[in-house]
Image 1 (cartoon, helix red, strand yellow):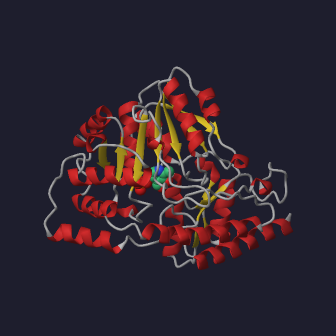
Image 2 (image 1 turned 180 degrees about the horizontal axis):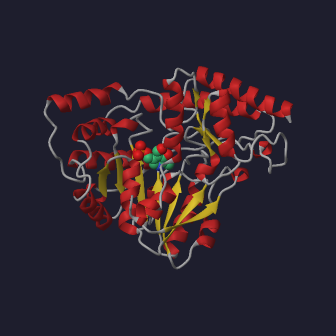
Amino acid sequence: MQLTDRINRIQISPTAAVIAEADKLKAKGVDIADFGPGEPDFPTPDHIKRAAIRAIEENKSKYTPAGGIMPLREAICAWHKRELRSSFEPKECVVSVGGKHSIFNVVSVLVQQGDEVIIPAPYWVSFPDIVKYAGGTPVFVETLPKDGFTVRASAIEKAITPKTKLVIVNSPNNPTGGVVPPEEYERILAVCKKHNVWLMGDECYSHFTYEANKPYSIASARGAKDKVIIIGSMSKTFAMTGWRIGYTLGPEALIQALIKLQSQSTSNPTSIAQYAALAAMTGTMDSVPAMLAEYAKRRKRIVEGLRAISGVICEWPGGAFYAFPDVSAHLSNGGGRSALANSDTEIARMLLDRAHVALVPGEAFGAPGYLRLSYATSLERIEEGLRRLERFFAHAEAAA
Ligand SMILES: Cc1ncc(COP(=O)(O)O)c(C=O)c1O
């Protein structure tokens, strides 16, 4: 079939592909220890569900303004101000169909053929493809485990060229869990301002940080507002992945362009989901620390468990809900511990087929030699998965 160049420039999301493979096996009755999906295993809090039911009963089922209902835009600004010390007004806010849609639209209105977009690697799988779809070129800046996968302002500055349009910072990061410390983030902002480049802060995991790391938004920094674009989402913070509500905060002219794009594409996000999001933004936040406490227990268990496996190196993730171990010692070109496989993708495939463990290979995130395990799953399943991983790598070493 003759398709456009732009669709041929991108691939199906590799995380979606892993989930589909695992689901196929599950449908055949195979018991999978599933570390694949990047979504909370908790239900949406009751007060949010009730608000949606009320919205249905009150027939709030008509078109809304393309950029979202005004009470929700107001509530997002108030929530962001309270939680993350920003100062956006409703005209600087647009509601979209999830954070991914928000990012897609921002890149669509800012990036065109010939533009470069700086993306720290390892990166969330969708960033480069969204940039490519818009005709731009992703430029990767490496982050390292010994730095806690924090991106440095100096590294970003080195990558900036006259073609650079946008820098994307995702903190806490998917897949590494890396958190950019506020001082470094402010240095990144200063670099962006100096070179007249947009800075997009993806805050989808803002409220899932551990130990000394606290929720932080670059929008709270002095002088941020003219160059900073914030992406937020209900998906992770309120366990609302399926509801599809995200938002963008930024300069009014940009927001107007985003609303124009939505008016000619998706129109408004689902009206019912917007009322649910309104309850999330204005109601109790009790569920958030409760989820975080659970993630903290799981993080401890999974990182300790992975570190106990021979040839596996795993840093402590500073945020989000992913462990990102380095398994390169088990690759044929990685120091030859067990020479189990040629790539992490092959290891992930073997783990799914032989050990019935689902996880995402690092190559999908621009990080060959790594695996991503989501610990948004119960402690019992983590224990079971660790047992299978230990056995798998022990066999590999014994066979070597
Ligand atoms: C870093 C990052 N940004 C954005 C998103 C988008 O989430 P959603 O579209 O569900 O809001 C995700 C989801 O996995 C993510 O990991």
